[in-house]
Length: 98
Image 1 (cartoon, rainbow, N blue to C red):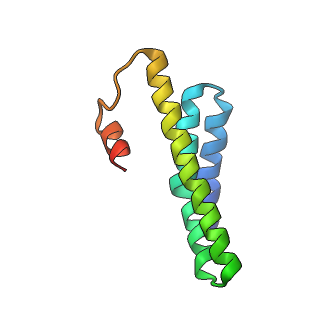
Image 2 (cartoon, rainbow, N blue to C red):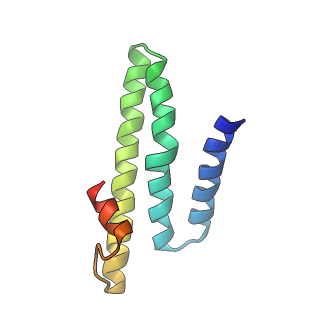
């Protein structure tokens, strides 16, 4: 049950973010998918062993990296559009370091 909730709750949050229909909300949606949803799923795939599972692990982690880049692009372009400075909070600094 806990494992089920660990996927459903973040996916529900992603759906809610996208439903907001503003550019900013694609940032948390992409980051949740990139850092919370996909990696555990991908690690389970790798642990199952075998060539195809290892290959699929690499593909899903590649998708995760791509989503993290999309999330960064969204927030960066949103800051540019609003004329705000970048990396002015701990959240921004830790995200940039990560």
